Amino acid sequence: MPTTDLLFPADPAQRAVARRLYALAAPQPIISPHGHVDPSILAEDRPFPDPARLLIVPDHYLTRMLLSQGVPPADLGVPTVDGSDTETDGRAIWRRFAAHWHLFRGTPSRLWLEQTFREVFGVRTPLSPATADAVYDELAARLAEPEFRPRALFERFGIEVLATTESPLDDLGQHAKLAADGWGGPGGRVITTFRPDNVADMEFDGWAGNVARLGEITGEDTGRYAGYLAALRRQREVFIAAGATSTDHGHPTARTLTLGADEAARLYDRGLRGLADAADAETFRAHMLLEFARMSLDDGLVMQLHPGSVRNHNRWLYARHGRDVGGDLPQATEYLHALTPLLDAYGNDPRLRVVLYTLDEYTFSRELAPLAGGYAAVYLGAPWWFLDSPEVLRRFRESVTESAGFYNTAGFVDDTRAFCSIPVRHDVARRVDAGYLARLVIEHRLGEDEAAETIVDLAYRLPKKVFKIGEKVL
Image (cartoon, rainbow, N blue to C red; front, top):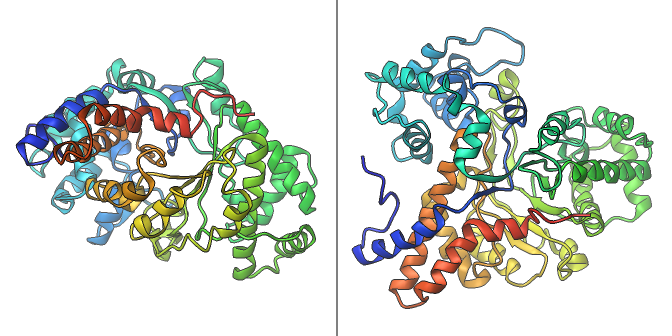
C-alpha cells in the first residue's frame, strides 16, 4: 500500500500542512541518544545473519506476542539458559512467524516491520503464510550484498550519532575498536552510555559479585562504601573517555532519598553480607540516584531515569530464557513525591539534566509535564517500550505541551536493539509530530513558519542539545 501519507491526518487541509512539515523533518540526520544496539555489530561490520536471526529472534516485541498465543520462544530460535534445544533453522523460524502474522494487525510491531521490509530492504511483497518463503528469499538476497552490511546501512540511514548502553563492568572493547576505526570516542558516531543498575541494585542477580568485580576493574576497595563510590566515579571517567554523554537508570520506581554517609555505609555493608531485604534494596537504589545526580554535577553526564518496569514478571520465561526476552511488564509509577528529595537538592540547578521516562502514560499531564515545566533540571523523554506507538506519541504531545511546551522535551529515542528498525521508528515519530503541529497551524494556534522551526528542533536539534551530543562533557 502507498505510504506517502502514512500516519498523516485524514483532514485534507491538515494533511497538506503535515506533508510540508514532514518534508523538513524527514532529511534531518538521526540522533539516537538512547538504545541497546550491540556495538559489536558496527565494530565488526560483518554481514547480518539470515532474516530470522536478524529480525525475529532478538525482537521480544515479536516473540512475546507469539508466546501469548502458545508458541514457545525456543520454537522461534530464542536461546535457552541451559542450552537445551531451540530452533536453529532460520527458514523454519520465519515460516512459523509468518503463519502467525495476523496476530500483529494494528500493532506498532507490524508497522515497524512492514516499513523495514519496504524502506530498508526494498521488499514490497506483503508477508503472509503463502509468501513467507518469497519474502525470506528477497531479504536473504539483500543481506548478501555489501550495501547491507552494518556500516553501509548506518550511512544510508543518515545516523549522525548512535548511543549504545553498557554496564560499568564492560571493558568497552568494541567501543575501543570503533574509536580506532574513527567511529567512536568523544564526538564519535557511536558512543556508549553508562548504565550502573547491575552494581547499584542490590536485587540484581549477583550484585555483591558485580561490586567486587567493579573493585577489581578500578583498583578501588569496593568492600567499603567510600571505595564503591570512588570506583563508580572512576568508571564514569572511563565511559566519558569512550564518548559517553549520559547515564541510564532502570529502577523499579522513581523514588529518591538522601541518606547520611554513615547510614548509607551501614546499608551498603548489610547488602554485601547478604542481609539486605527488599526494603533495603529500594532504599539503597533511591539513595544512589541522589549520589548519581551529585556525580553528574561534577562530570556533566546527563541522567536518564526509566522507572516503572516489573522485571521478569513471567517467571517461567525468565527461568527458561533469561532477562530481556519479553517477560517484563509496566506498573503504575509515582514521580511527584518520589523525586522531591532530588529536586529539592538539585532541581533548579541548570548544570544537571534529568530526562524522565514513563511506562505509565497517565502521569504525562498529571506529574511529568508540570515537573518539566517547573524545574530547570528536568526534561521529558519520549514514550518508550509499551508506549512507543503512534497513538501514544500523539497523546504525549497533546498531554504535555500545555504544561511543558516543546522545549522541555528531549526529542525522540528509539530504545531499540533492532538496528534495522532505527530509521523506521524515527520516521514514525517525525510523521506523528508533523500531524500534531499541522493541527496547531490549521487551528491558528501556531504559524506555519514556527511549526517548521519546531519540527526540525524536535527531530534533530533538541536531542542533540539535551544529550550534549558533540559537546565536551567533563
